[in-house]
Image (cartoon, rainbow, N blue to C red; front, side, top):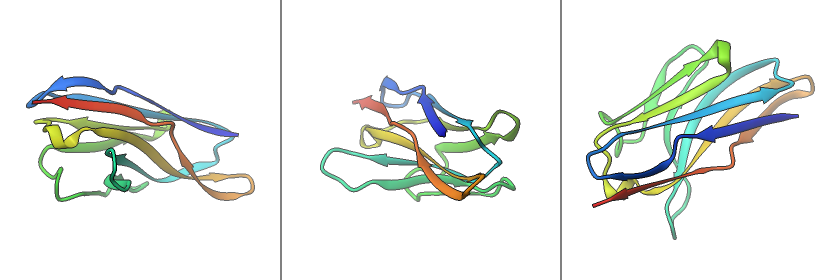
Length: 119
């Protein structure tokens, strides 16, 4: 059994910063790509940032230059540093990971953490 547990969401004023964390635990052989998605009310879930096992990264255009994704492979943890937050960043943020377990590669999601940016 594998779990992704997120933390770090909250309420912040526009221009502020938050750091999200997502720790994977369980019967993990290895972790491939990890990413952050978000879903605002009435909208589809969208990718925010992605980091490959080798460390290469990709970002949604809306967050480039403001958000930074990183990972600690020893701790099976992925982070999302969010700076210069805007009200339109308000959403539930979900961690995602492609994890090699004994039975193959599986796609896992965290439970979500709310980020609210006030104007």
